[in-house]
Length: 67
Image (cartoon, rainbow, N blue to C red; front, top):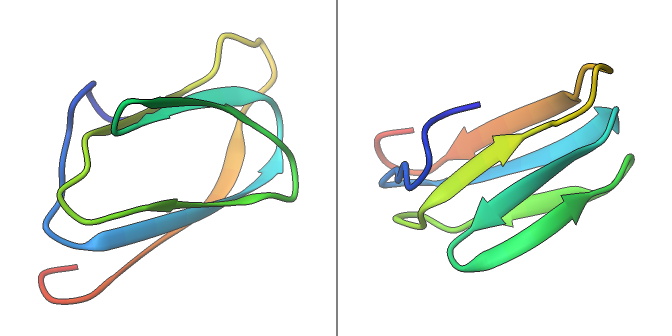
């Protein structure tokens, strides 16, 4: 989901509903866990992906000016 090093001028967050995946937020690599919430600060490079055959299902929100 998105290209590596994408940035946005607004904050974002997502909750993993099901599946497995990874995210790179800034320089931090995160193993995504079901029922956990994650924050992407504005202007932070980020990419989210899965290597699994199982879909990665999330609720994704963005807020602030230009969201």
